[in-house]
Length: 548
Image (cartoon, rainbow, N blue to C red; front, side, top):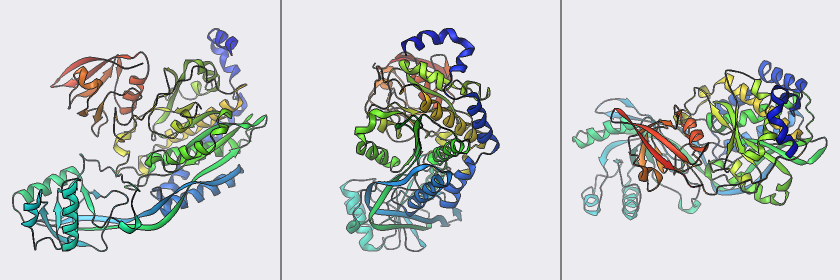
């Protein structure tokens, strides 16, 4: 390894001759991946035939069975749905709709969280402002039956009191507002079959919510109707990861993992999070089996579930197999949406091997360049590769670039099949197939020399579960566009003087055009960063130093 590290800078263009994927295999992968691609067929089946795949739903079980059967048809070995746990209560979402019927007709864009109550029939009634205290609640005596309450307190003891009163009086439920144009779907499976939620809480798109609130505030008589078919299923509900192997010819007991998560939220059909990653995992497996690839190590394809609830499936699998982790070379996870795979980031000690593995990718398509980056540590982003890095296995979350706006689709009503970009999906499948085969063919396992892992979780740009986070925690929440600061917490951003409403435009000399740019530019290079924002019609630059 030391000799290779010394020689590689002097090899120049001939370095591709040392690539761990032969020219013949690379050509075959390209032909299969571009000329006979099935990646969009996989995605179509997941999103349009099966639909959303909430962990604990019937759809997820169907998706797991379909993925298992698809892997089996490819001729892979050891194909299985491996149980990792169970939920006490399952949840299946049926059709839902809402509208205002008075004083005018208006079709609502609305949603509810998973594992929350729905209606048993179309439920039409007046909208009343929700009381904020016991005296206001008492003033509504006799008026709650068949009513919807607008903007109740989000939680707390009074909300419990209010809910009990609405339920006892025969009220329909609650209505609130989303954040901007995007309606995010979340929810918690930690519910009790003997104490299921009883009242729906409907979220409206922000502009519609504001209109409704203005009418109610003005004293206008407003009537709305909702039909929300949310269904609970008594458990225990078994939960599975789907696993399939392309056996190694020389080191079959050593592994390279390729994967994505099969589960999704159910406010749409789970296309970019993470149907796109599940589809490229399936397609990479299909490509490699179709060309008759013979990797030296076993390539293990994995589709996890429970990712959206906290990496549950991958963590459980790694914990169960923790004594085997020394024989796992790397884990490649595609979970950043439909933009093309534009790079990979690892410790500098890994660079010589990564350059050999990805040498063919560097000449794959000039319009979709690929870059290998050095990082100081593997940092938390919020996907299943972290389960492996926590166990000492190099886990990679691909860099991605392109024209897709991941913020628009991530966990929102727009996460549907039409958001996926076919040419990016094909390209990414080829990159994954090359990367998996190259890693599997290395003379040695991927280096773990000086491998560092930063613990904790990074979401948004420093908190929360919205979006893929940055490894270096800035300490802000981002707005729907992924670049404007919505909130500033107690942290580096506050100390540096960043403010809500600032739009991040540059990190150092690097232009920030998308959330992916923000994550990449914050992560790479030195801990000292110049962050330039638009504020009040002009640019302001602040200096931030992240902890090493």
